[in-house]
Amino acid sequence: MYEVIIIGGGHGGVEAAAAASRLGLTVAIVTLEKGALAKLSCNPAMGGTAKGQLIKEIDALGGLMPIATDMSAIQYRMLNRSKGPAVWSPRAQVDRDTYTHSIDSLIEERYKNIDIIEDEIVSLVTKNGHISGIVCAGRESPILTGAAIICSGTFLRGLVHIGENNWASGRYHEKASNSLSDSLAQLGFPLRRFKTGTPPRIVKETVNLDVLEIQETEVEEWFFARETKNRLLPQLPCWRTYTNQKTHELINSRINESPLFNGTIQSVGPRYCPSIEDKVVRFPHRERHPIVLEPEGIDHPWLYLNGFSSSLPEKVQTKALRTLPGCSEAEIGRPGYAVEYDVVPAVELLTTLESRRLPGLYFAGQISGTSGYEEAACLGLVAGANAALKIKNEAPVLFKRNDGYIGVLIDDLVTLDPDEPYRMFTSRAEYRLLLRQDNAEERLGEIAFKAGLIDKDRIDSIRERLSAKNAWVKRIHEVRLPRGKILPSDPEPDKVESAAHLLKRPEINLQQLLDALDGSLSDGLVYDSEVLKAAEIEIVYEGYLDRQHREINRLKAQENRNIPGNFDYGQIPALSAESRYRLNLHLPTTLGQASRLAGVTPSDLAILLVYLKKWEEERYLQKNDRQQEQIRTKA
Ligand SMILES: Cc1cc2nc3c(=O)[nH]c(=O)nc-3n(C[C@H](O)[C@H](O)[C@H](O)COP(=O)(O)OP(=O)(O)OC[C@H]3O[C@@H](n4cnc5c(N)ncnc54)[C@H](O)[C@@H]3O)c2cc1C
Image 1 (cartoon, protein in one colour):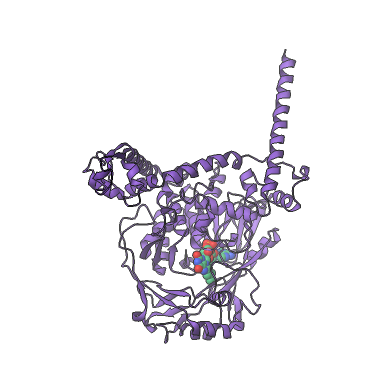
Image 2 (tube, rainbow, N blue to C red):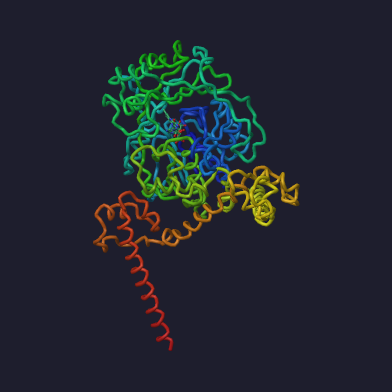
């Protein structure tokens, strides 16, 4: 008997287990292969646009992914540096094997109450309409539990395709899990089919890297995890090449051999992550597509061919590959492939990630319709924490859209009903400037501490840094100086302005002000480059940030307007049939959630608001009448 059982030891599973364990529960991860915890199914890289922000948020919530990323990073880059800080996104290439070993060692050293069991879970046991246990293929009796979290990735009825060959497999030559799908279907869960794909890995020594553009690691040091102090591994480059007309002609001429194009694969894949076949067919006017050759690890013999995902026959993949500069003699180590798998639509879930249909059962990661290591890890962490909090009879941990990308992710999933694998983009967040990678701890620290996900020392250090930043912001506003001190050629050099006012000019940065003011700006304040950067961003973007805060407060009034659980949408004839159907299906608890349901239009919302106000008024009047009646009776 375990208090929480996690089905699957992938990125979602390990975070779910660690979160439930941090809350003091006994946890088991049951997974198909013990040695493949948090295996990187696809590219050997973590983070990137919006995904880097997710990792920073996982760090603020005490998760494993940021620490393991730093332990295995072989190249760091902050993407979008030339744009505003709202979209700066940390990314790292990692050594594939070291990543998995790092997760292993973190669990072994820091999470003594997690057991890892190698087995296949074939069905779920229920009692009185609640999950009560799981049945493993290799054990006679079920293992009992108070909660189960399914994080089974692409394994449920997984079907791998390469050219005309296809076979049951969750990932390349890893066993698929069919019985668990059957068990979910028997319990009434609807199942959808999604697909994803991965590029070929190529043998490094067969590529002429000397003729390719090189991309080095960043010189400036920063980390994903608060606890990391140094780069631990040697830093390696990546290389860039491009497709050309020959590549496109070859792929076009063999397109019918791709299961994506000859009708073999019918399920929906991620549009934003197209295969090379898709790119060539959908963008015929493009002369070339960039392809990045990424190291799979320090001593790994293969390179990952980012941008070249394919399910063409292996021989065609080799021919297409050899049209790329630097790759004329390249050999494939492992071919690219596509995989189809079952998904439980996330609209089946509450915002705690517990299933509406079967209390005590949670879903996280690819099985709930997302794609990506980071998305899976966030969902796993939230599901693990909420399963544990429910068992402890404590309030769940919930995230609003303005708390973090994690809030955007969950809210989108449970309300939008995505019909393709969902991945995070910065454009999905309406409060991008507030949800920066540099302020994740500030946004989420108190939530994490309240839920028990981080300890007192961690929250104390977060509070200290926040008050240090606030002190800097205050000082920069207070200190005044003549313009000429920092802008020697200014036409009004004697005009005195606040340092904050001057800092908002694009040609001035905080370091220049510090240099010009000879210590009077920093007197008595904590000098920490990260704190300084945060203070600088806050001042430079003050106007925009204020506007976003005002917008949040304005929306909050309506966004958080509760919709009672027993609200009767049938009483509103003016609602469109589609809206009424969606509202009855999802039973949103706030007007904000209702507003994000697919098919619920702004005019439906306006009508709903009128009825909600009327409903509230009637309740108020009824309550008032009752009180008057009580007063009369007493008198
Ligand atoms: C081919 C391919 C290409 C991908 N491409 C990308 C990409 O380019 N970028 C990106 O961000 N993401 C990509 N992904 C997605 C990424 O790998 C997943 O989103 C992420 O790993 C999902 O994490 P997860 O925890 O949901 O599942 P996984 O990491 O897949 O882990 C699932 C775990 O569940 C276990 N399991 C399954 N069924 C059972 C069972 N019945 N009993 C016990 N254990 C079970 C498995 O052994 C495995 O450990 C790709 C995935 C695949 C397979």
